[in-house]
Every structure is written in C-alpha cells, then in structure tokens.
Image (cartoon, rainbow, N blue to C red):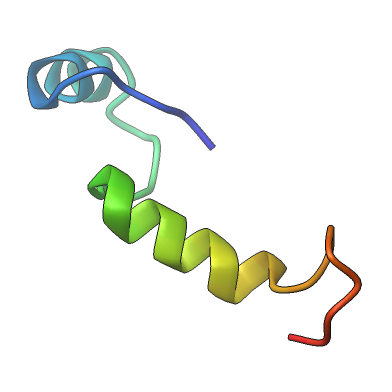
Length: 47
C-alpha cells in the first residue's frame, strides 16, 4: 500500500513504476475501504 500527497505525486510515481498494479482513491474512500477490510481488528468487533 502506497500513500501519495496529490494526484500529481501519484502520476509521477506511476510513471516511474509502470508495472505496478493498483488504483488511486480519496482519503474518504480509503477510510471506508479500510473499515470494510479490517473491520473490528483493533476493536474486537466482528467484521
């Protein structure tokens, strides 16, 4: 998992790493996705 400070930063990284797979997301979307993936891992609640 990589984090980028801007779309420009992401584009520059992709230009340097053309074989890397993945998708960009906003902070809000990433937070929602993380909650779905990791669920209650830290709270002890079931996913």
